[in-house]
Image (cartoon, rainbow over all chains, first blue to last red; front, side, top):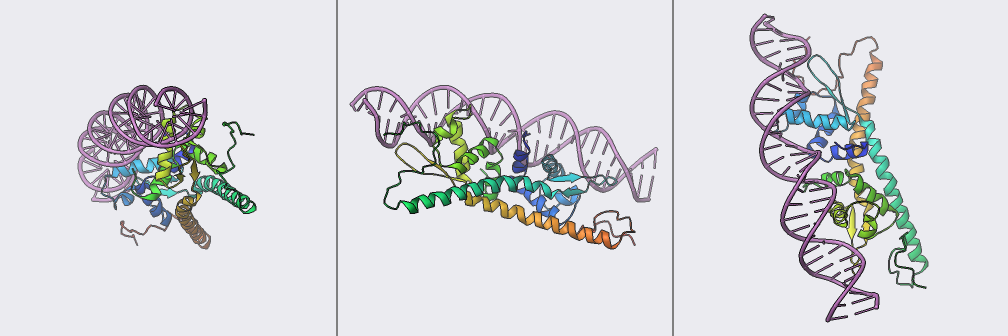
Length: 125
Length: 125
DNA sequence: CTCCTTGTCAACCGAAAGGTTGAGTACGAG
DNA sequence: CTCGTACTCAACCTTTCGGTTGACAAGGAG
């Protein structure tokens, strides 16, 4: 299993069946059998999927007699959205700045983006 | 390889090395060797990672002599954020509604969340 | 032209993922 | 107590994944 929480969440949602389960749980809590019904796989397979979702923190399971109602923990989504937003914003910011550069020197050919921090090729004169 | 785009994006970002590469590319475009330098894996491995990111639409590669500058395509993030936001909102909405129910009947024991749409157990009087 | 740098492709390997079947546990109903 | 239901655990199988090594194509640099 992946060590870091972010990897666990992303890889948990990388499976369409698990995303489908999350979608169902957004409507309301459900038992394992209820969740397994729509799919043509065994209940054991769905139980494994739920374990993956649980390890990712996306889902919690309580006891209620012999039922195990599954509950969606939506707050874990923040982990992802924060990561995504960070780099999306950064990339947009960079794009905007590059755009400014292009606008300020419309005559030069602009060989490549100037954002390379490692001048391995020895910056000729 | 995963068929649907959402699975491709999620599983592309499920790997910490690939997330790291995305983080670097948010700063600016880079070549394969530059990207491979920080890691103690071969260039071929990084090339494979880039292929995964490219198949997910997160990255594009252009030709520039024998270099292949890698560029981050941040707009694909929207695919994820839209999916996430949808179910996060839905879950929060449900939670709010449940909260209202609890507030409106503070005396009842509330055996379990009333959001179950499949009354298999025959609703005992 | 020859060499070196950059990068990809192909084949292989071990580990993990997703599925199965079969057995076992926990609990309520009769 | 016995049975049925709901679920999990364990073992196994096949495919995918992340990594390796080795060979190769594409272009400057000398």
